[in-house]
Length: 245
Length: 245
DNA sequence: CAAACGGATTGACGGAGATCAAGGCGGCCA
DNA sequence: TGGCCGCCTTGATCTCCGTCAATCCGTTTG
Image (cartoon, rainbow over all chains, first blue to last red):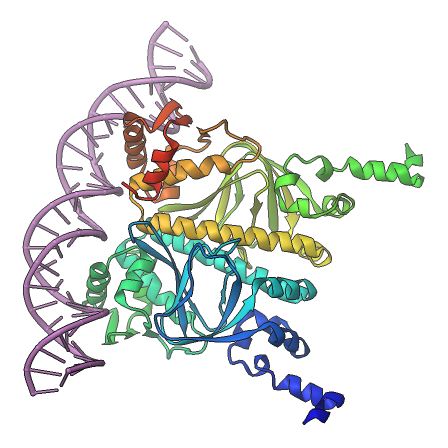
């Protein structure tokens, strides 16, 4: 097999077989801004990581050494107050980038919700790659921009919406998030627990539970299982989410 | 004066006199990533705008034609629910960039709090400039990154902090924001009304007022005027902001 | 299969902050 | 100088949602 090194066509072949080139999440991630021949450069600095449900990815306050791209599964990122109150600031899925909002140290913690796989990069390596690939930087800026817009929506939700409006907004937003599990029409999978939903929406588990049963009894949604539901009246749910009730 | 055009040194002189080169906010803005000779390119696409207090800059839902850099004064950006509930998602000052979290349409509205001056760019022109100036793009990404981190802090505040903790956090954060008005040690200027503070912190005016008087009577702060106060016990205020009480 | 366990639901109650209402205070203009 | 207006403060009451507690339910374990 050693001869391969001297055969250009086979080198190209080797590149085609890189992990990145067969990555199921590539199409949804910033990596899609790199053309196939650039993927080798990405592969060179990428490291595969797998996490079991509940395992920690990064911890708030630790030096920000690595950046991550999620390739499958889901991740929660959150901040804590000294007394343990938790605010989950995002649920991330395949294609999402972890570490955008990061300076010297991580500003938040991250853990797997379900078993997940990720690509890990040393921040220094990644920065170097960015400088050589303007399209990659552009893709990152684009993503940061979208996350900022999403953050503003979340601030509106947390600052001004009622419990029912928060849940409704959440149920409408969630299915659009995971590209690897495109929900059937109006079908919502909840990979996270009630407690995580509560900490994402600034509520308690009890309130989440009560609102869900109320939406169920009014016929807006139907609970198929603990972590699976169907939206029966999408228009009604949209009205509720925007406070038109 | 026509001869000037044929004299290189005078041309250089002319560039020195560009609006950007004398801009008081340049040092704090993304423009600082451009070296002096690049400023001419910025000048070419920049347009000066002045706003009186209360005047509108952009409106949520309108096509996002322009981007802005604030050069003096202050601006509030906010989102509304159909019934009029308002969430202010940010107070912006000299050097801040308006329009990062913007796709096809503006995702939020913006208005001047005080009289303000801004640089306005057509989005298309600005994108073209970015492509030629990697350092500018880098500066923008950097700024987006910081705003994302700030947004996460605000989500923690809105989702999990008490009224008193929110006010304390706000009073500690605000003085660090306006580079053109570096507060005297522990002196806080409040260019916005109580109503705006309330809509930024997810509270009502009454609660803002009550908490401020409580902080006053406990000696943590002193109200010098309606829009001016002094932090008498910074350590105590920091403890309150983090919920250590 | 029973018991234990973690997460979810449901109910009763209480409290932080919203709502409603009544002044207070300073700035502006006639 | 006085009256008006916008903004702020203060008080009384209400309510949504948090807290506390009991129970349920599906899963795991011995």
